Amino acid sequence: MSESLPLAERLQRMRARENERLENLTKQQLSDLRSELNAILQRELNTIRSDIHSQFGALSREYQTTQKSLLWQLTRSRILYPALTAFSVLATIWLSGWGLSTWQEREIAQNWRTLREQRQTLATLEQKTWGLTLVSASNGHFIVLPKNATTSNAWTYPLADGKHPAILLEREK
Image 1 (cartoon, rainbow, N blue to C red):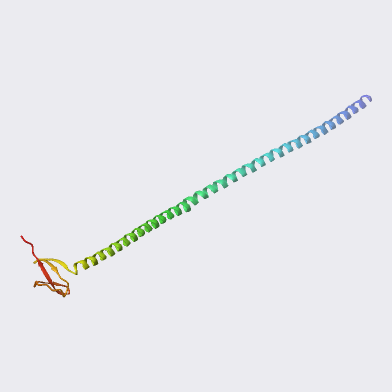
Image 2: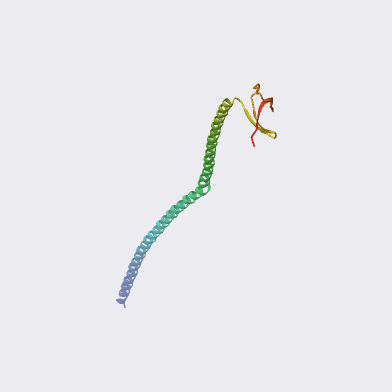
């Protein structure tokens, strides 16, 4: 039995060494597996982090684009269109006022020219008629002579500045 004891002891020692070696290999494999899992986890976290950053950047750009679009719409609807409308209305009012005043100036100038021509015509007629005035009254038609004129006829006609000599016109029937 003494021979079996060293064999049992040797087997036990071999088993202990085998167990220790197996334990070391298991620890080594678990350590490698842990390192590999940590690396995979770190890669996945980095991937998730980069995806989050890219999505955040895209959302940020989309937000800025939307914000600019909304600001432009607000500026157009609240400032630009009302300002253009007001400018158009004011320009229309100003241009129509200018056109009307220009037309009135031309009409007034034309009326002054017409008055001047009529005064000249009246002065010419007075020179040609020597101041005679034609009057129709209820008692007949008269040619009224200028003041201080004489006729062989005894007719006179009252005007604002006194009685004037007149010639009675009669028509034959």
